[in-house]
Structures are given as structure tokens and as C-alpha cells.
Image 1 (tube, protein in one colour):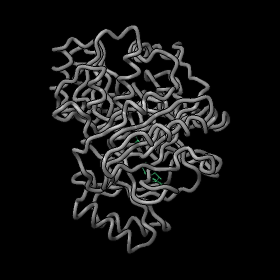
Image 2: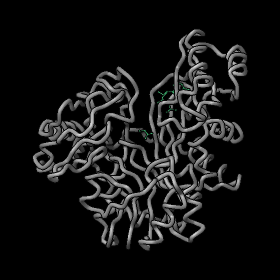
Image 3: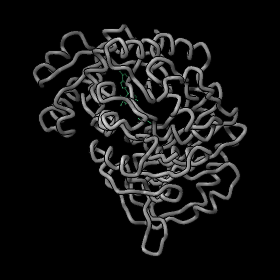
Length: 427
Ligand code: AMP
Ligand code: GLY
């Protein structure tokens, strides 16, 4: 089969890596890809937010299957453009992708179907927001931009002053452009955060081995939010009772609700959750694989990813065998100097081969490109996801840290506490 992977991050490198191991894969393409992906796939230039352009590209290479990595193309309508041309594509329709593309849609959907989530109101003007916060919310209050804001559109306001400032920034200064013109105000939930991803064909589903990510820039969960500084996956990360409750109270009603409303959800659904004293509640939905959770998860997947994707498209995921290794895995993100703020680019990377020579280690590229003499250069904020698999979580962690210690580029930084025992015990 000819398979096309859309996107250019660490998640897409992990997807391409796993697809390349399938005997069904004859030719792998990626658009636009990155320097790591281009080692195994033929990379083609593309604007990932132009649905028709992507569909034409898939048609021109006669792709049998296209996998969409990031959310923006899904929300922009890539799946419909592909379906119109009868091209097989993994990812929800734009109507179903609203679960991530519009927080207001997601919250109102959950309300319609009694899916547990934080109490909320939707506000479409600063006045509505100011009146809304006085209508029975206690501080801290969570403020969320309605549209896509690259994971940065959430602010927890500790008091009224911070609230007013945030409303000003979101709705008047428009720091997130149109994404912040409407907002959701939400009660602040407390508990342990967890996330659960599933492969689904709209009716049936298979649970993806749970993984945990680390959003904050610095050790001890300090510092600003990032796209994700690391992740790990290990058997039993979410206990069976909690998992059963999440599927019964959240996953299944979501699939049934989307289907009943005429927007069946197909692809990968990601539920970001707070495990509160009152049971699991949804913080957010994503309509695609998580980054960097995917890097940790796919090294544990024993089944053939092409077959899983085919079973989603043929509506038979329920009878597809999806099995996970009992091993654990850890992914540590190496980031550029300055990230998550303004960051440096164009720094030569060394030590990649030394890192990958360690057993069980794969280095997934995110923001990398090629220099003039063929060397790897940094091109993004998150540069690499150094990922290790081993029989226990501490062994996987040690291996991942040993591997990343062999890699250098100027002002590279990474968290030193990914998958640390203290955090796992507490979480
Ligand atoms: P999101 O982008 O929606 O995942 O939100 C980013 C982060 O904000 C989450 O990972 C949580 O840590 C936090 N958050 C979002 N919504 C809430 C909420 N209702 N209560 C407490 N924390 C929240
Ligand atoms: N790691 C969280 C996300 O992909 O949104």
C-alpha cells in the first residue's frame, strides 16, 4: 500500500516509524514531514491547512491510506475533501472535529448527553463574560478560548483582577485572534489529571494504552505550558475500575451522542480528564493522537498499525486485535533554547546515532531539518522525542536519560523528572 502521513512533528514521526514496520506498507509518503520522517518516507511539500490541496496531493500519488496527525487540518475539513474524492483517510469529519475545534460545541454537546464535565457558561462578548462570572462562579475560574489556540488558550484566573485582565487579552486584544472572540467560563476542578485515547470507527472502539504527558516547561511541573515536554506509558497507569468508569460514563456516551446527532466520530478520540472525588470529568477532547503521548504509546503497540487503520475505515475495529507490550516506555523531549517562548533555530545536532545505538531507543524527530552538508539542524521549539522501551518503567526512564545525554545542540534543554517514581506514585 501507499500511505501518506500529514504533519511534521514527533507524533507524525512515531506514526510513520510504526507504519514503516508493517508488511502492508510498500511506499510511505509524508507531507510536509521533518528530517527524521524523511529518512523513512518520501517527503512532499504541502500546506497542511488546505484541505483541497492535500486531497489533490493524495490523489496524485495514488495514496491508499492517509493519516492526519494534527488537529488544524481536521478542523479545516480535510476528511470531507478526501471523502468527496473517495480517498481513504484516518481522521474525523470537520463536523465531528468540532469536539476539539470549538470548546463551546464540546461543552454544549456534553451537556446534551449528560457527559460529566465542569459546570460552564459560553460567552460571546466581554460584557457577557463579566456578567457571567458574577452568576455563581467562585474563584479560581477557568477561561478557555473557544477556538484552536495551540494548547495555549486556557487560563486559570485566581481572582477577579486576573479574570478581567484575561478577558481583555482574549476578547479585546485578541491574542489568539478569532479563536478567543468567544470563550467558555468553567468551574475549576481538582484531582489527578489523566488522559485516555481510543481508536474508533464511530460505533466500536479499542482503548489505546494510557500514557501521561508533561505539559509544563520545567521540573516539578513548574514554568509555562508547552506542547508537551515528555511522556510515559506503563501497564496499569489507569486502574481497571477507573478505566471502566471512564469508558461507561464518557467514551461510550460520546460515541453514541455524536452518532445520534448525525456526526459519527471516526479516527482517534482523546479525552483529557480530571479524576475528581465525584468521578472522572472531561477537561477537553482532542480529535487526534496526543503529542508526545504517541511517541511513548506506539513503541508499546504490538499490533500492525496499518491493519488497525484499515479496520477503522472498514468499520470493524470491534473485532480487530489491538495488543500492547507489557513493557514500559518513556519519551523525553529535547527543546531549543528559549522554548516555549521565542526560540533559537539552525543549531547542528550531534549524537543521534550514539543515542539510537542503545537497545530499545528510538529518537523521534520533531523540529529538525537538514543542513548544507547533510547534518541535522534544529528548526523548531520541540526538536526531538528521545524514546526508550524496557521491561520496567525505571529501566525505560534510565535508558531514555542515558540516550538523551549522548545528544547535544547549543542551548538544548529537557526536563529531568519525566516518569519519576515520586510523580507516578502521586499521580
Ligand atoms: P486544556 O487545553 O483544555 O487541556 O487545558 C489545559 C490545562 O488546563 C489542563 O491540562 C488542566 O491542567 C487545566 N484545566 C483545564 N480545564 C480545567 C478545569 N475545568 N479545572 C481545572 N483545571 C483545568
Ligand atoms: N499532549 C497533549 C496534546 O497532544 O494535546
